[in-house]
Image 1 (cartoon, helix red, strand yellow):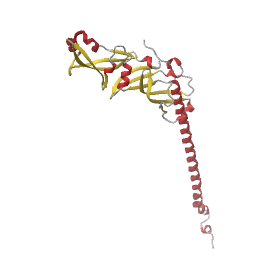
Image 2 (cartoon, one colour):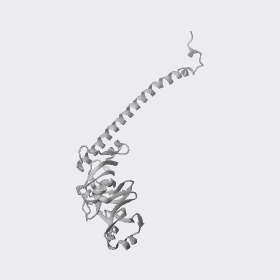
Image 3 (tube, one colour):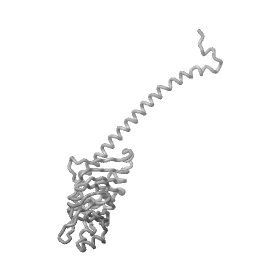
Image 4 (tube, helix red, strand yellow):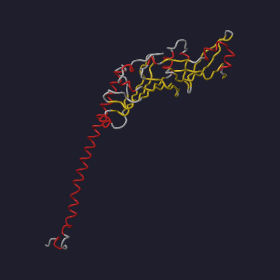
Length: 270
């Protein structure tokens, strides 16, 4: 029986083996795919382990620095891939959240975002922000620290904080409702009267003063509440608003808090 290659014209014999050589490529392709899959799996595993270690370490550090109970829920998230950030020596962003964190006489839900955080904590981080959410009961606890403020009569009804009180007229107590607009000024929480109701009717400040005279001063005044004494000095109050049934306070954070113990200490009222 003649070899099939002997029937080919001179110089074309090499092409007879071409299909066989193409088939030999496939084992290499499969092997390469397996190796790449293993490397990818190892990288994913290393990323998961590194993320767990970093976020767990941040969680423990937060609990230690804020003297939180061991069973306190603290959620930590580092956006993006962690391994490249560790190699660079800085974490681009850290998000931390915890419910019912004690802040002096008040407890609130706290979320914190810090940017450009050094791994070794040997230099300042970038700017950060914090949000504290208070429900009606928590707000009442805060306002109970203000001398002369009727904290038990406070409610929360977006977009205002409400105050229900009474003014005396000819010996009779007249129900007065006050809508207080929350704000921030000089680092303090401010409560500014924005509207009033007397006996269910909406009146303005002039009408209220005309009816009650000097007695109206107690509901016409603006309140300024210092909260610095309950928070780390690194936090500066920038905005306060009502969101549904909660009061939301927003703060800027000095990134030097990671290296300056004085900024981690409680602030003071001026």
